[in-house]
Length: 212
Image (cartoon, rainbow, N blue to C red; front, side, top):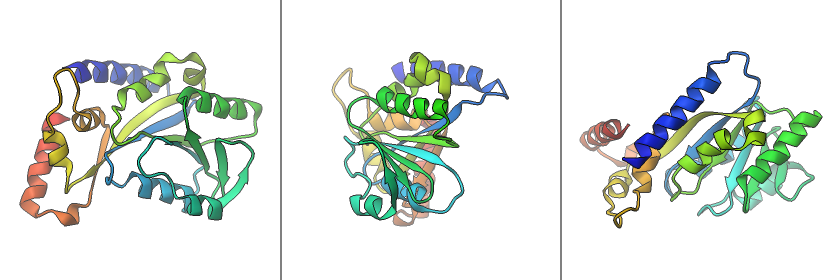
């Protein structure tokens, strides 16, 4: 299948970049998952909790449920740029209206100038998005590749609804996004497990393992 070939090439490229233990580039986590899987809740936690890490959260503004505006205004320390907001806990919140590379380049310039230090970057994809194009950005664009490396793809999964997403029939030539998100994941976080029975959970876990 197409995604397995793309996934293999991304994993190979990432393995090469991680082989260098002295790699000082900023590690990037791509966060994916369908609407209702818990992405926004996780991102809100990253932006407000006292966890001691300085992370940049890049939110795709075409997403279904954005980061709460009230939460942002209450926790914003400083906004010097239309697309980049500094939070009280030291994290950075960025919105992507058009071009992911443009936002990443802005962060790269700040890091190079010494005005910003990051422990990591988290990029949210929209619920219907295949994570492959976002992942490939870190191997294709030279500016991005020079300051950041893809560390992993994390897929949040809604245990209650994942099977119906996986079973959804698509037109010929159109990939099932849920299958793509599971197949590309380095880590899967199974959420809302309290809403399904133990036998259902075992069946869901077995199915996810059969895909990845």
